[in-house]
Length: 365
Picture 1 (tube, rainbow, N blue to C red):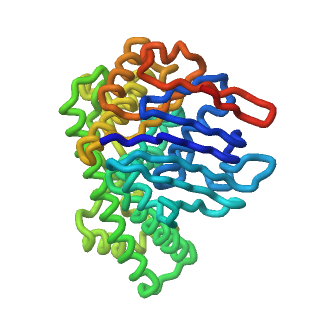
Picture 2: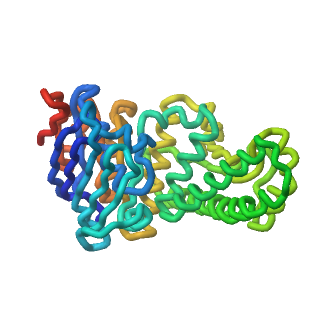
């Protein structure tokens, strides 16, 4: 089976007033000058999966200016041996809506059909910046395997915000905390379990592949202490930590205190201490492993979004990346400033050019 967009229409989205792309399932190479709107196309594709897209932008931020009327994306998705008409949109900055084959649907429904993974330039500093970015990176991988992971994460964050509000207000009555901590314990355990499962999928995918990209040994660690192993253990830990949390004004135990630790496997060097090129190669390896694992799980590789990835790889690794994408059979969407960055793909990819026009971005084949 294949997973691919065969039609894509972008309306009033970012710099694009209207763009229509007809696709045949091959990898997609998009080139054009900086600022022309290439990344906006990839962001549109990322919204065919659950969540806020690859830029984590609000619905209001995605609308075309100055009109700010809202935006709409529609496409024909080939998935699970069928074709699905997908629409997602936002009106006047409201939360985005989803429709599948004309019926109102949830983002979880969308996630069951479309698995989308991505690598974007802002991830290049993943190993050397804060733990929050690494958690988000791992959660996106976990979400690709388990679409319900998003709902668990949202419920946990909502409950934790409410608990933190009580802590800041120095509320000490245990009855105010019981229900919130119960919900945090249940969803927090689900989050932790999904993250561990995602790491195991990645480990197996890396072990089973011979690739030009280095493998990473990954471990989920806590910034302090250990993550409670069961729902009851987490509920008890939240209860016991309450007085310490009151002093801090925030929750100090739970999956939001986890971090992703990576090591360049062959060299035994922590990812944070690797060169910039090695860190990029490790990221590419993880995205490819994610795609490989999904292909084994659901019978089709995900849609892969690689923004400006070619510019940061030497010619040898660039060619190796393209070989792996084609061997996987994935519809990979890639951007770059010039056609020479995609020369090794030849006719194995569709090519589009994005340029500036009088009314915004223009996409041409």
